[in-house]
Length: 39
Image (cartoon, helix red, strand yellow):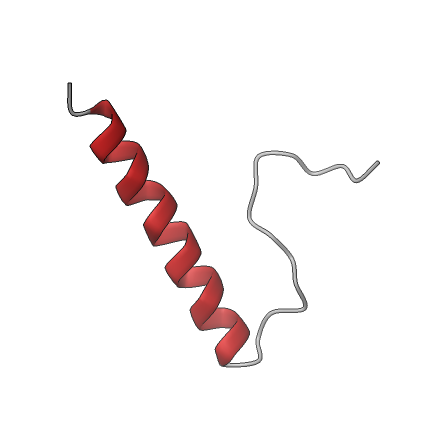
């Protein structure tokens, strides 16, 4: 029942930290995902 809420919270946290790192200029657009490979 609360799974979607948890997922949404996790995604929001990820997006927030990603946005923060971009805003502070620390990110070179490296996305923290489960996949390490680019095809």
